[in-house]
Image (cartoon, rainbow, N blue to C red):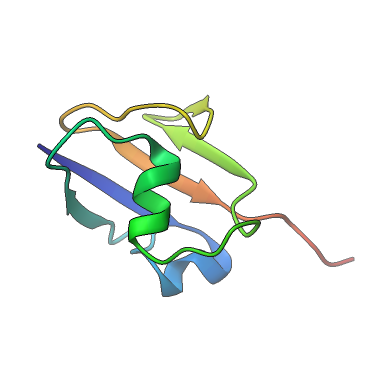
Length: 77
């Protein structure tokens, strides 16, 4: 089963950007937190998860064709 996964800011170093998402093959029912770990995304740099433009938690299990976006904490002034 395939999903699209992308990120903003620093997360683009690990996954594609929203304009060019990474296609990711899931071989079993995995939660988003497991997928992030497999992709080498460090703990604490993802604040929010959006699936098909709806906020989900890290325990969400993606389904075929889901569009997952990872959102980092926002900083600046």
